[in-house]
Image (cartoon, rainbow, N blue to C red):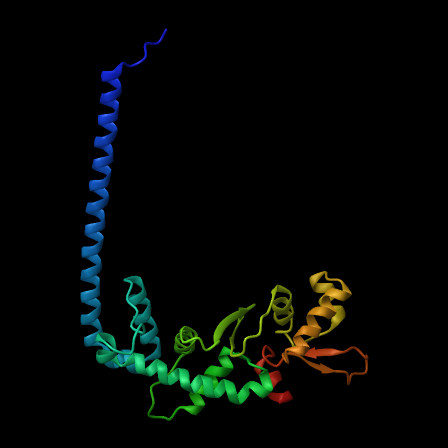
Length: 249
């Protein structure tokens, strides 16, 4: 019969566990201290890098996007405030606030056509056209960052993904999974047909019509009954290929 450990044995086991726990805590603390030290070093190097290349960061959108990625890796957000070190050094806080205002103005102007849901590429194109030749170049990444700043302010602006497209929403339209799937299907030609939706998505007629009717009510779809085959087209300007949208507009 196996002999059970006595009181002294149990005490030794408890002491050993305590020692292991203390060693583990010390190792974790050392690791945390090392990581904090490395992070502080990275942040210092990042500030030096920003000072050295501030003109490139301001003027080159690709370089600016890479700089933002470097900042994210060390937990720095240059856009957290338009005051302080980063704003004084780079001025990018003011740059994104200005960009945000221009984006709002463009979305308000196009809302009659797209009902508050505009393709990010189209928004970027209109933004570049609007800005003067002497202004800094902007990228789609800049647009996304400016819109995130707008979202923080409670403006209702948001970037959403529908299939392979990114859309900018400027109205509080709630789209569910069914609506997103229809919008994704419409990306190929700019429109869908009820029978096509039923076939591709394996939906019932009622489910298809209900989803399309809501999209019509929200102003995201337009009806086209002028075809020889008498099959109704539901057009979606917000996801239509640019060439199709341009020719129809």
